[in-house]
Length: 499
Image (cartoon, rainbow, N blue to C red; front, top):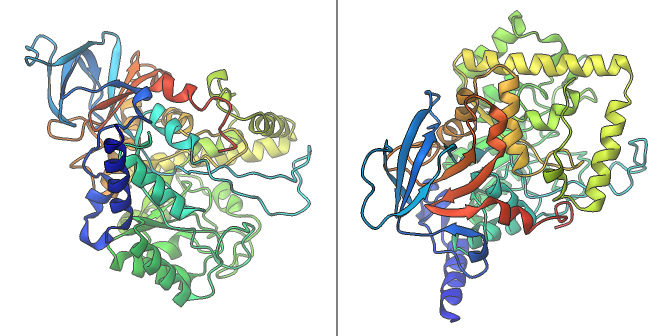
């Protein structure tokens, strides 16, 4: 009885220690599937070599209109065919009749984290005595929550415990833990004067280069620059990441978007919210206290400044990650979390959420108007970027305060893209195929087509007509194995925010 567990542990250990150079990026992020072990079996709803999802609506992730009343055949972890429901089902298939349901590609979370930012000294007015937030790891709850919501592939987009993330990935890949495929990002590439006491502060460009080289050797598959990095450090990090065949993104502040594009960055996080190029008094290599708000407030999507910036990014082939959920408190239509989402929070995380939401709602009319202006400009700029040919990808940035939760945040990101003006099928493409395209994995994931990975989400209703139906997740297929969304969520009830 112990042998399968021993074999799985051995496989996990091998995956964690194998030379990254010996395995392609695609196979590191999407390794061959493993059978779910005893610890994962309680969450498995469908596990058969041949599965037929019959009478489903298919939104394939390409942006095309839905296909009605189809049968999707899954075999050995891949999609075998998509045919009209009247087509014969292969002999021996496990058949799931699913009228009224829609099948989507698995979401690809491009700004997902494995931690929760805690502020132990935050008072009821939103102030702290010492500006040093702590970052506890959500190793137990986060992977289950992502998978439960249909996130079948995720990028950690900055790690505080990279060894933990690498080991979690290895155990997921071995079937020992339930969770998505993972693109593990290395530790934050942060400069001096960081408020995060757990982050290494780079000394210089050589330190940046050595840090990237070391963690590439440990097996991470992407990197993220942070708010206080200098241009010299960023350039060294980008060049070293590219030397290893890996990409680098950035939540920037000290370096502006045009500067980062000129240095060769691959992706910029948080849409246009943190671009500081026109902040008053911006000094080279210094993050201003305004952190991009004046630049965004003044950058109407139809302005010459916006057109120039977007043209610069598109020409340099820089992707942009939309993270609308983390900025939703600025929206005049800020939606409360549903009770089903609140149920997974610890009591302290729930308290954080209600306290900070109350502070947001109590803001002055002038402050609310200023934030609403930022929100409106952000939505328009994201649409303009896509219209100009830019690659927009999506993620929620679940970092604390209780308002953005793994999985739920990824689904909310799609809904907010629709609020921004994209059609539902366009928003779903941004959250699926566009992410796969950025990762270079579009031949394997991101859309529903014969021969691709059987990474799919079954939801109730029709998200192409009512995007909120995307929240009605029932079954999540990863590598052809169907996971019970409700069981995964129930297993972490009251735990997110602690571990």
